[in-house]
Length: 317
Ligand code: TXD
Image (cartoon, rainbow, N blue to C red; front, side, top):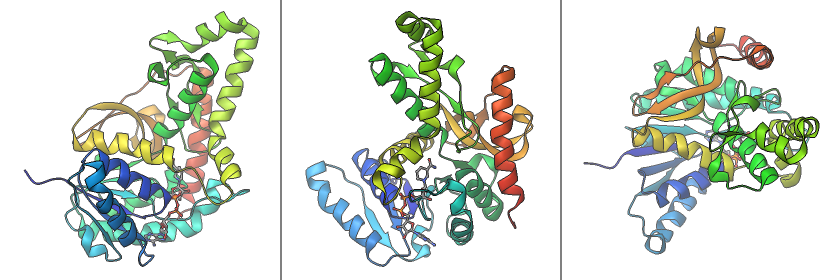
């Protein structure tokens, strides 16, 4: 059986880390595309030259020609500007929308049967554009943000409780913005509610204060890294989060993952993308799982989605 084929549209910080992670897993042959001449070719050659030491037998090609993504099973879009200090994700919309329009047309023309994972920001808007312009069915176009945001939430919980990250499970829903919705009620350490463990450690009142700080840090985690790096945004954690989605699709893993998916009535939302728990497998977004949200969670979710709606409704196609 021929190896699967992944195309990266955008060979920058996230694209480069993703390729190394995918090569280490021998997940698929990979085509790295970028408009910068030399960058995709150089990174591809570097990964190929690492292969004897790394022990991975996959082929990685760098290109500036969209034609070379032909027949990809999976396309991952990271093309676009990243934030600089002081910028919001929304500040990227004009430039990255133009980039997404060209990328989506190229995907439609060269990889018409591919699944597409969009990473570029503002994520919820970019995945909407990609879906509209490719015309692909909703199960084959998805955005990566919820896994990253949930991982950040879990990392901060693990740091606070000093437990293994392997045992911390969290969910963040809604848009990939500062109003994202970390679900405190669902946060657990191998089934033990995080709030129970925080209350044991601090008592009820301080436990809520500690959790509020964790939620706040989760919401602003992207900006925290942009402020530290000054030259761009996070790339290890986004690339690793996208890998979970890519692997779930290419290995038909039926993972339950927070994914930016097109809602058509679920959660009371119709015709907009938002981060919700999904079953991800060979057919992409195979199922959307509807949670029972309490009043506070529903209010936060609706507020987060209304921000996405405002951005999307301002788009021309
Ligand atoms: O969780 C999430 N979804 C976010 C996504 C997490 C972190 C970063 N997020 C966004 O991903 C970020 O705000 C950016 O919009 C994208 C990519 O971030 P990255 O850090 O990889 O940016 P780079 O290093 O600038 O890489 C972008 C590449 C760069 O090599 C450009 O030359 C290329 O995109 N680029 C293009 N490629 C193809 N086609 C066009 N038109 C194009 N324009 C730029």
